[in-house]
Structure formats: C-alpha cells, structure tokens
Length: 480
Image (cartoon, rainbow, N blue to C red; front, side, top):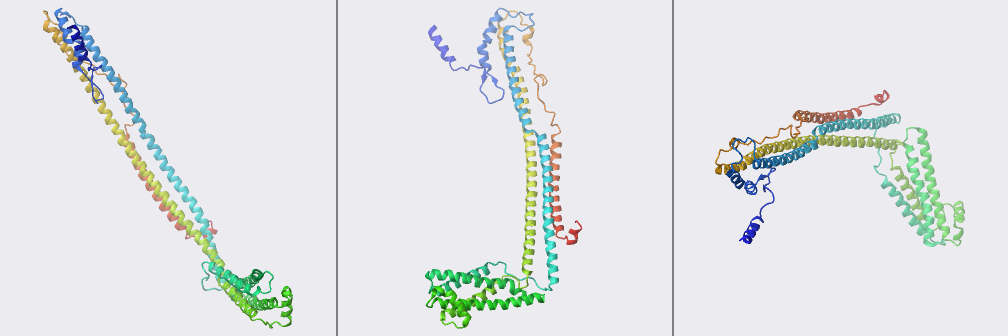
C-alpha cells in the first residue's frame, strides 16, 4: 500500500503548478487560493492546533500560521507594488518622450524662421528684378531716342530666326561649288576633286561678298543721313561692278582651262580679260558667268533680309527683346519660387499643427491608461485583503471547530491590508504640463497666425513686384 500511495501522490502532483498564481492576461496576477490552502494545509493545521486549544484564549497576537498567511499576502503586495512602479515608470517615460512643450517651442521657432527666410527670399528677388527692370527702362528709353533721332514711325522688322537665311547662304555656296566644280574640272590635274576645290574658293568669295554687301552696304540706302545714303549707293555700284568683273574673270579662267595650256590658265584668263573682256567663247563659261552673278545677287538679297532695312534698328530691337524676355522670365521664376515657398511653409505649419494635436491625443491616451492601471492596482490590493481573510477564515474555522475553550478575540476580527500611499511608493505625478490645453491652444493659434503672416507676406511681395513695373528712368535716377 505504501508504494501504491507513493505513485498516486506522484502522479497527482505532476501537473500541479510550481507557483501560486492563476494564468491570466491581467497586469496583476490572481492567487490560486485553493492551491495555497492545500499547500499550507490550513484545515489540517487549524484542527491540530485547535485540539491543543492553541492559540490561547487570552492571546492578542497572531500565531505562527496566521503570521505565515499574512507574510504571504504582504510578499504578494510588495511584488504587486514593484510591478505597479515599473508600469508607472514606463508611462512616465512615454510621457517624457512626447515632450510636447519642447515640440511646441521648436515648431514656433521653425515657423518664425520660415517667415524670416521668406522675407529674405523676397528681398533677394526684389534686388534681382530691380536691376533687370532698370535695364528694361533704359533700353526702352534708348529705343525711344533712336526712333526720334532717325524719324522712324514703325516697329523693327526682322526674322525671328536667322537659320533659314544662313541655310540659304550655305545652299548657295554648295550649289555654286558643285556647278562650278563640274565646269572647272576640265583641265584640272586633280579632275573633279580639283575643280570642286577651286570652285569652293571662288564661290566662298562670290557668295561671301554678296552676303556682306547685303548685310552692311544695302541698309545704308535707307539711312536718314545723306552721307550714309551716298556711301551705300557707291557701295552698291562697286558691288555690282565687282560681281560682274569677278564672274567674267572666272568665265575666262574656265575658257583657259579648256585650252591648250591649262597649267597656266590663271595667267591666260587675266590676259584674255584685259584684251577682250566680253570675248567668252565657251557656252559653259557663259553659264558660269550668269550663275555666279545670280548667286552673288541672291546672297546679297539674303543678307539684306536677315535684319531690318534701317541700320542698327534690328540689332537694338533684338537687344531690347532679350532684356525684356530676361526680365519676364526672371519675374515668372521668382513668382513661382515664392508661390512654392508659401505653399511649403503653409503645409509644414499645418503638419506641425497636426503633430501637436497627435501628441496631445497620445498624451491623454497615456494618462487614461495610467489611471486605469492605478484603479487596477487599488482593486488588486483590496483583492489581496480579501484573499488574506479567506485564508485566515479557513484556518480559524477549522481551529474553532475542535477547541474546548473559547478562541482568541482577534479570530473574529477582519484583517485589513494597508494600501500604500502615493508618497510611500514615489508615485511620479506630472506637474509640468498641467496647463497643456492652454499651451496647445496658444501654439495652434500661433501657427494659424503665422500661416496668415506668410500669406500676407506673399501678397505684399506680389504687390511690390508689380510696383517695380511702374518705375521710370527718373525713378531709378532718383534712387527709388
């Protein structure tokens, strides 16, 4: 029977827990009262001591069994207090990590800095526009004087791009070089390649002179000054004379290349021109003559239409357009930058406001969780008190049931488990953010005002940019 009882006890206790708690998700664990009663053998020990009438009737202190029960409960109370302190510390750390006051100060400083930067950006933009506007005013005045001096009553006329005219010039050069190259290849020791090289040099001079005359000489015919007109007319006459003589010489050169002595074609061409300028015997040479004259005249016309017909008018108008375009582009860029800066500043301040409200919400959420923890702790202390009286009652009732004399008076008393005061456990009450709502309200109102200030600064900047457009040359000279 001893062996059977041993194994029975072994298997009956194999699944018992090694601690006195009931598994739970609560912050403070509940005691397994039934297990404690069994482990402490309260009923058995109460009966054994009651049979001996212990403790004595006149005893006023707890006996060993009662003291053991109370020590168990006090130990559990101490463990619960430590768990409570750890939780309070965690909540305190979370509250400190929010650091709402520092966030409010930092956000306020950032908002001020944003406005200062915005004003600095406006100032820099005004300086740039002021300088560009001065150039616009000066070039407008220069144009006004130019028109008045030269008695012009029209706007300048010139192509927006010279690419077409430059393309025409290169086309003339290429086509004339190919045509002449074919004509001049006869008699050249390098054949077609040699003819093309000679033709390229001839065409460059022919077309180049035509372009130069069209750009620089022809416009003088329309100048107000009679001396410039006379110079232009002389230049045009000289050009026609040059073009005619030059192309006749080239035609004689082509004739000489086809003769018996192509190696001395240049000398023979000069002599032939001197002796009889219009005596060109070869039809291809005549074609070269008319083609050269045509290309030269076309090049002159092309050069003439590359700009306004009045000398200097087109150049000045282009410079005016460039300055005005620079001013317009810079103003547009500055307005875009200002708009982006305004939007970014406003957006950042709104984000800051959202961040403050989020931290405020998180702050109260932590406080609420901490208050629930406090209530749970106080309830747990009352629970431990009830547990202690339950255990004491089991022991005392078993003891009184077998006594032959009266039990001590304290057997009928309710044990009171003293709850720790806040000061006893160092309860970390927060006193630094008691006026949180007021601070959050002030900060939010400040951000709203600063957003309004940014908008006002933006509107003021736009107005000042517009005012720059009203400045005259006299204003600049007076230092405005």
